[in-house]
Each structure stands twice: as structure tokens, then as C-alpha cells.
Length: 104
Image (cartoon, rainbow, N blue to C red; front, side, top):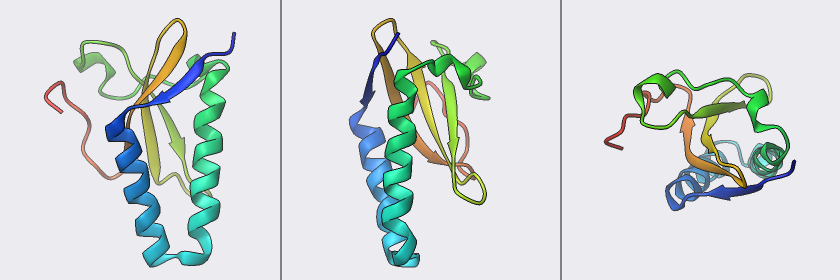
């Protein structure tokens, strides 16, 4: 069953921020990184349960999963919730950032 993939406003801002960082620090790589991340996000439409629960899932009101992304090493993660008709990408985080809480 294919679901829609929806990015929250916060996730969109975080993804754009990460892209801008790559544009500044690795301009030859930025476009490929960004397009690859978008492609991986769209792959959530089919079988999003294949990704593991996020470490903070047990501490939140709803279970959330994570998709790790990076070419040579995993640098970012998409934290998302699976709904019957959609996958909602809640946040895009660098793997070094602290875990999410209900207050964020």
C-alpha cells in the first residue's frame, strides 16, 4: 500500500538548512545529497515500517521511526510517524543532535 509522504513545515526548514550547509561547505556534493535525500524520503511511501523505531520513540506520545541517510556515512535522519494513509516526516536531524522530546 502506497502512502503519501508529507513533510511538516519544521522538517522542510531543517532539510533546507542542511542543504544550505552543504552548499556552503561542499558545493559539488550539495545537489546530489539533497536530491538523494528527497528520493529516500519518497521511498517512505512504500513499507515505511521497514525502518526501525527511533531511539526516543518510547518517550513520545506516538511511536516514531527513523530513516538514516548519508552517502559514505549516515549523517542525517528523518524522524517520521506512520499513519494509515500517509507518512508524516516530523523532523530532519543531524545524527549528532540530541533526541526529540514532546516539548519540541
